[in-house]
Length: 143
Image (cartoon, rainbow, N blue to C red; front, side):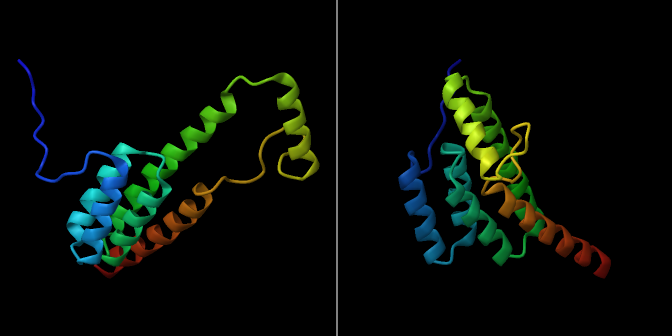
């Protein structure tokens, strides 16, 4: 049996069309459709920091803090795994040695070569997650 996926009429199939459609919905104050489109953008191109940020803004404006926190955690997981994969790639030993020496000398890494900072957007999203968790805690105390 063949499964056919039905596309909604005028539903974009590539990332740039999806962003344009989402922005149009946003401009027309159709927040629900804009959120749906930005989620589709994230599915099409998971490394799109812009789509994650727009989702966070829309959820924040509509005071859907649990959903905002879920998107933050999804973005952190994806970008963390992306950066971890990049670190594990096999590279030329000379380039790796020189890169590690440069990072140590500039204070970006410790003596063992471990990075001393969080990469963007992870740091920004972790800070935002703390704020959202505090807001959710305050709301639960009110109820």
